[in-house]
Image (cartoon, rainbow, N blue to C red; front, side, top):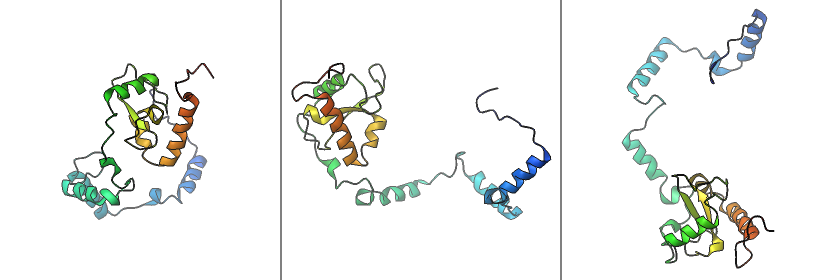
Length: 177
């Protein structure tokens, strides 16, 4: 038997009646569609080339994008993403942070030393101009994406991680307390 195979369980007539009664309140099980409705659904699904469901037209995608652009986007922070990075923001500082964090995501702790996936450097205080070592932390793509919401929580969380590891001048090794 493979994973995902359904097991057929023999059921008694009494068991079937109990299941039938339990499903009576479930509207999806009771739904009876007319032949006309069934034909309409079949025609609609035939025209759709996407087997996973409805696929929006290019025009509809454009309208949706415009509706969530700029101030209308729930993640909008007043245009701060357009601000330039500091001149200190270089490949060398990114590499230094990754080495300091041993090429591990500091949230989920996955190692990216030998992987093709990229490890991102996150500004803890969300200020692109603050490139001090205690304000930067390594994150994987998934964890970095999560930090765009509930920013106060992430600032406190990452500051706690940094404060445990930073003695003010040097990074404290994990085996030392």
